[in-house]
Image 1 (cartoon, rainbow, N blue to C red):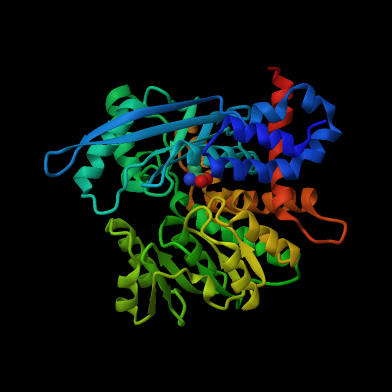
Image 2: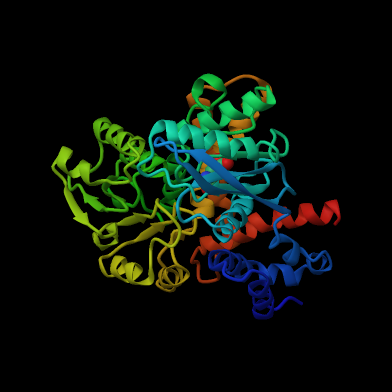
Amino acid sequence: MYELEPFMAELERKNPAQPEFIQAAREVLESVIDVVNDNPVYEKNRILERITEPDRTFLFRVDWEDDQGNIQVNRGYRVQFNNALGPYKGGLRFHSSVTLGGLKFLGFEQMFKNSLTTLPMGGGKGGSDFNPRGKSDSEILRFCRSFMTELQKYIGPDTDVPAGDIGVGAREIGFLYGQYKRIQGENTGVLTGKGRNFGGSLIRPEATGFGTMYFADEMLKAHNDTIKGKTISISGFGNVAWGAVMKASQLGAKVVTISGPDGYIYDENGIGTQEKWDFMTYLRASNNDIVEPYAKKFGAKFIAGKKPWEVSVDMAFPCAIQNELSLEDAKTLVANGVRYIVETSNMGCQAEAVTYFQERKIPFGPGKAANAGGVAVSGLEMSQNAMHLSWTAEEVDQRLHDIMINIHTSCVSEGTEENGYINYVKGANIAGFKKIADAMVQMGY
Ligand code: 2IT
């Protein structure tokens, strides 16, 4: 029999100063421990010990030259967490907060998320503490070249397929892929999120945001409700927020906030026009990491230094970064009448906030289910690359939609409690875990 607390104590002892990894592991283990103890074959195969230890981790130095001719030094990482279901798959994050522990949490989450998509992908994550804020395009190019010069040793289209994440969008993927191709001399699906002209999939840029709205739509249907007419708050202003804002508007909801490190925008008219969506893309490409210019351009309010969770809405979608929504924020949202939370950033809510929502029986969709559309379309990009052809936007969007509906169904079947409350966290963790654990058992140690 596994016991949660002694297991967690040992995991913490082995992974000191990795609080996010411990937080992510605790959440999954709390959900799956009964399933594991009911199936002795899992303990016999030491699945919990094996699933909480990455297969391997690469840590390397990245030297690059800034525009003044100074040599800058950053750290690069790739965590290959688990490849039981397929090649390691997961994004690269360029952000000043990146640490090994942070990437281990992301790789761990990625493994279960990828399992939920039902596509053949294992879990991995990588990145650097390089901060794109204020960097010129040529600095970003030089950094990407240097980063890939080392990373290319460890990845390949059938072994490990990175993609984007925070700070890594189409521009960075293009630079990274260019360097991979220069060194390896091959056109392969070794990265996803590529440009349209060199193997990228239609709908990949929109996929995470579209997917979270498809998932939300299913959540509402399961509660005899509809997304049409709902008022929504979104945090962040990058790729994920952009896709989510567009799909929410198309489904008839009104998004009233986006946010950045500088504060949040409150747009009472709704962020519902192509011009506003294009402006979000422009803000991201400008490398300044601020949203304030939106307020001036569209006559909306800018609230400096605050998060959007103080606004009264029907649904809240954290779309920025881990732990961005605290217990205090959860209390404010609930006091203001929020009815659904759809975590779209990876582990966007602190553990106490999640518990607070669940105790009040507020439907809470966890990131590893709600945001799986991004990596799902990455998986579809791999399929298209392997076949050397490309699908239409309609075909990719339809497959994405079906995958999100299936993920919702899996959450409901594994997570519905006796009182009828759908515990999406538990459902996603159990459904994601079982496939990986069974594959590991079947393949031996
Ligand atoms: O967190 C995520 O799922 C991603 N950053 C996307 C990963 C991918 O391989 O597309």
